[in-house]
Image 1 (cartoon, rainbow over the protein chains, first blue to last red):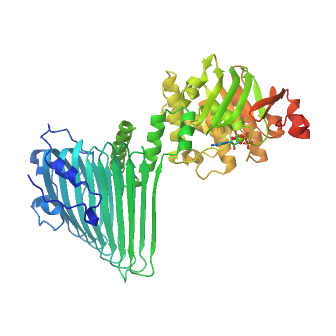
Image 2 (image 1 turned 45 degrees about the vertical axis):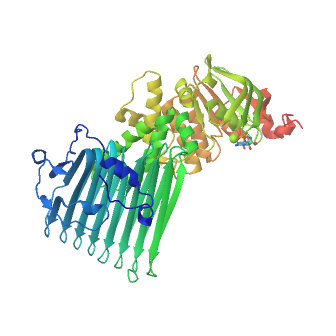
Image 3 (image 1 turned 90 degrees about the horizontal axis):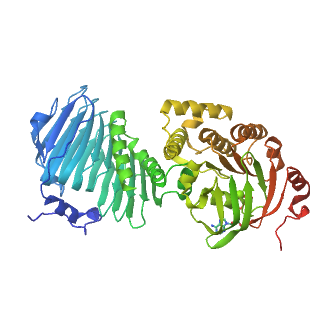
Length: 354
Length: 251
Ligand SMILES: Nc1ncnc2c1ncn2[C@@H]1O[C@H](COP(=O)(O)OP(=O)(O)OP(=O)(O)O)[C@@H](O)[C@H]1O
Ligand SMILES: [Mg+2]
């Protein structure tokens, strides 16, 4: 099979693990791993290699069928998937989607359209091995709110997601992604605050080890005034792995009073690992507040000794400090059940990596 | 309880401890005084096993065991507590979580059952009360944003919870206001003055020794113990200085 994939020579794909995607797409079949839903009410969708498992799913308001593919280099492969449309004033239970890969490649599209004043919560989980590729389009009407949490915990292969979101006036998107498996990752997003006073949080944590490469490439566009955006990313890299965070904020000329924040921080667990950070600001308005911080460091040796001197063994002390580092990102998840499940995944990863 | 013999230790290739010998028996409180840079904190760190502090000669025996053989967390489980001159801030880790992990890790190493969350909280609150530390400070990240005095009080709350057999308290009195000094002094007596425990109290001033009466006082200068005596030595030092008692660094 020959795959038509982007090239690292393109700036937007500079840190992408193209070879990792190609290798994941031809992974040999594995036995179907167990996967369970969190204890939440609402829709439960189970996709196995990109195909809905009807018997194991409960669609509620969600529909499954053909969707218009976009133009994104990876996302365009997804032509079928699920959609959630909420009309005005509707209240919906959460939507959980579990994606199981058992080798090879699979592609699923999704569409989330929330009308004015509606709100929804979507939680996605990736398990198994193979190349899992997703393309999600999000449209938020006036004052609509979407909370989205995605965890990537495949044992091998690659997970790539492309999110395109358009936020109406006063709409809010809070999206948190955790990569805590043994897969390569690309999180690719274009968020547009198309109405006045929109609010977007798009962030998460990448935990890499071995020779894996994980990255996020996110661009938030402020097209209208009074918007707020926060991109808070934490990357933890062990062994010879590479984690890359590229986050851009673009403020249009008349998007005055924009508040755009980027906080990109990397933690090297071993000196052989790599963290790349690229915060970008493109500001065409003159009355804006844009703060950005980008730092890479190691665990604080003084804090480690302090903890050890109180009786905590070194690996546990390192795990506690690393959990604290990652917590900033995961604390953005409002739902306690979801937040705790994500934190447990991060802890399990740390316990085994340290 | 603790025997230190001819201890030599260096940091980054620079020798700081140059043949230090000291013996502390159970039931005793020893004060160590000495000029800035003499090596007092270094002695504490070497006892705690801090990485980067290399012992090049000598021995440290604690309750009959070779302390230098042990990892830092094993020394803690063996009963050694180091009160830091500069307690470390740990953002993102709450005091409660840190201390519960610490205590239960020590208990596990000693083959004891872990304390439940409720049992631990009861113990932590009682110790915080005894040292006048607000309960909400237990929930805050370890030492983050604590004032200098609050950090030192927090060290003593930790000591109360951990209940060690041997404590090295490095300038626990510095940064404390007058009332806090008395509270901390009472705390040291309450937690540590027992026939089966001992304390090494590193301090620059007599004032803490007014509350915590030492059995022995030593002067540490230029990496060695240069003078030892009873409680009166501290008073003499306060009056006459290190030069006055002939315990200054030899030229
Ligand atoms: N990394 C290092 N490299 C070289 N010298 C060091 C290093 N760390 C500490 N020292 C030196 O070791 C010596 C002993 O320091 P130490 O902190 O033990 O002194 P102290 O007796 O506790 O002093 P104080 O009363 O000021 O607290 C000092 O001269 C200090 O500068
Ligand atoms: Mg000192």
